[in-house]
Length: 471
Image (tube, rainbow, N blue to C red; front, side, top):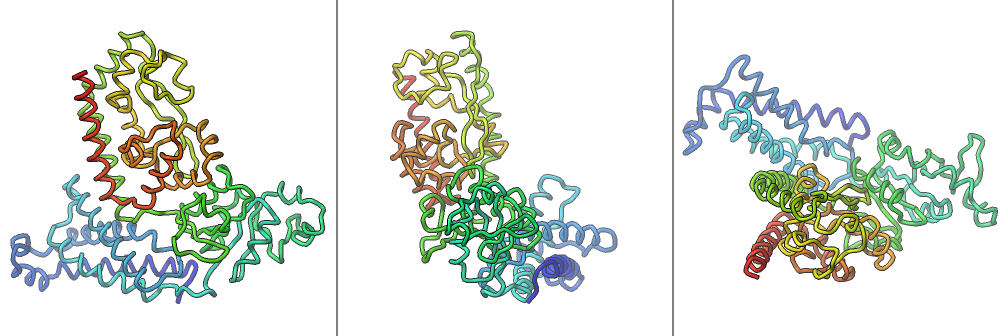
């Protein structure tokens, strides 16, 4: 069993070496002769490459496959079946990438015979390699820290962790403001270096150092001990865990505000910081880019017509923007065609189409959903997805969070142009109904489920357009 940088170096070297050997063997004369006898594949077989051509194939394949396996280079404890499944998924991602490179740029194209030959080989040898060097999921291998802003909560959760802890992260201001009570003195005691020990744990720094600490100490799990699950700190820590592939745990009291495994028991529960399967994630993002790019190009005449109609109607601006909440509570600006009189778009949601703040053109845009076309740009740049929970105004978020503690579970999924709530007609004035649909989508999400919702939304928009024109 390997750990730390030794594991990283040997995993990278193993992937590169085994990939190079697979390409070299696949391009040998004996293998090419064997492939030439196979039906269909035999038609693709050509003379085995030699010299510079072979080196080019090896280098290209090694670079792509090695890059595809980046998520597996972190020495996290994994079961054998999980290791095999993850490695095989990364092989398929790499093969898809190699095929895509060849499709878009013939200069870097690998022969189809090579791809066909190395795929089954890599599906066997690379998972076997990672099984050989994997870290076993035993308590002794876990590297755990506590991250929070409440010394009392840090001390309480530290006692619930059944493995040795490396230390904790906490803002200096939180330590300075600890009340001089008997309980507080039992939790935090000053030390000479200006930090503080909590139940014998060393302070590793403030919350601003979380990314450095996760890397420096090769952390496997972070236990989050925040007094309040606020956007800036709690979800910022979750975002850091997500970016570095670190597992996160929270106290069961906060389980209604995060995504957790359904079978979790005990005081601490696992946070599902990456609910999407890797392959589904790649497919989803690819579909987002293709859908938004095609939509912007195909609808360009409609976009020009709408822009002209808005200008002719009242001479005001064509677009308006609002700050919306995205993944882990981050914010972005979303754009829509203006459907209300200027200076009225930033007020509370309007569901009454007879409202005098809505312009004549705006009423048609709202009824046909054409006012949302500019959101295709947000999808293209990655702020939104085609399918997901509705992007909510940041000002509206505070009101909705006060009404529904589970609202923040939506922050684990990128907001979407359409979604389960949208296709079922849930309104902004019905937060409980929207939340019910959004949480149902979060639990059921998959690429195939997205396709069903997209089909339903396109049918719904078409029906609304026909009905509006007839009226």
